[in-house]
Image 1 (cartoon, rainbow, N blue to C red):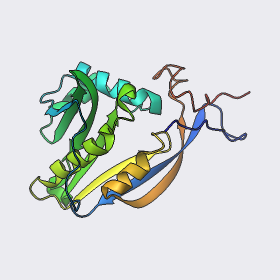
Image 2: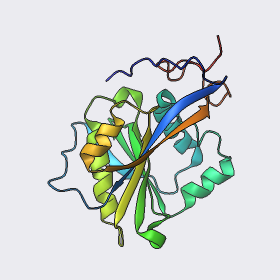
Image 3: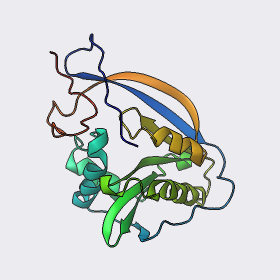
Image 4: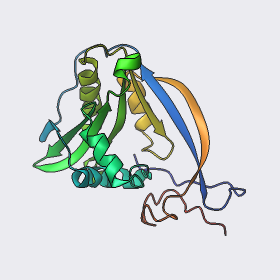
Length: 207
């Protein structure tokens, strides 16, 4: 599905973009059989002790069309610390040896409230539309539910993400908890992302 071109409100503050964040949870494992692996897809492979440079390649390539910017502005030392944490798992899929996407699971809250978070999930632009996304999400959800003490999975998405993202999470078994409307700095204007990123979202410049 091609993203629709946004129309920004006329009274939007300079440099700001409106975004709605949707928070979801899954309170029980998915019913029914697991999805079938798409043809020619390899993995997922657990990227243990994932080097920050490789992770940034995954994060930047997957996230640029959707204005992913949080870990672009994160200090390298902090990112390395997160990736070295045994509670964080990065699982990468590929097609004919070429990385096609990843899912990142975070068990930081597992001990305190039995929660596992799907921290990041997405595909390289060239891999979208091949049936990889629904299968990878289903695979990751089922893996998360095998962890001892898990009683709840969480994930969030926003209106910057692929237009099918929210529906995909809901079909996988996640339920909407709440939504939150925000105004955020346009990361293309702060230099975190190229001006060509997410062309369906107009730059937050005043006319």
